[in-house]
Length: 280
Image (cartoon, one colour):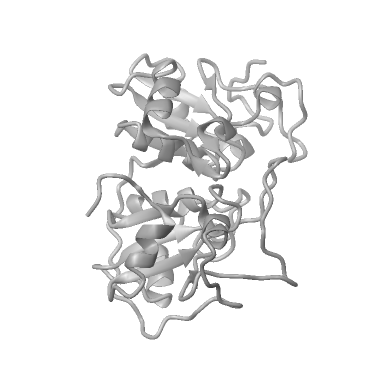
């Protein structure tokens, strides 16, 4: 189909009637200052035909003390079949901020073995800005899907992998939180967490890879990332809770990096009082 993990609104309009197309709305209420949902309970709009993919409450590990952790392949398969996703589906995910929560949905599907998944660059704001029609509500699946999850275990990682990476020159941890949180000069939004960062991690706030709600072009992304890591290194992205880390993973993918992993627990886990090392 296409080499990029992105599609734009023009591509989506052209393919809106494709039988294999599944559009998934994957919004999560933003907590990062400067990022806002354009939807609200009183004023809601959706791309016509879009179905809800809720990885914050539904497609996630149940009874976890950490937010929206990756579910088992069995639970993932069950939940996405319920929303009508098939083995041959071409999936386009979007969110109502622009580019905020949807990259995690994209990476989750890739982690479960599905490659025909793409992110709508600019999300719902770009769709509306193009003057395209919206629906007042989301759609439901007409039939159960036949999606089969085949987990790729390296695409998300736990703290043990990150701990090993702090002393591994073949790996580079990129922390996408703000510089203030990274350097422990600004408080963490979640109570009880330590300030600072992992040893050897570098800081590239995820907002820097965006331009007006869309991902920057490939040349800009390559320049940013090559200052921090080589394409031969394994790049582990980390953030506050595993959402915006996936924005960086998307940026790295577009820049040609392929040895990529997301620290699922991110700072919500690492920052807890523990023996995991933290430096200011």
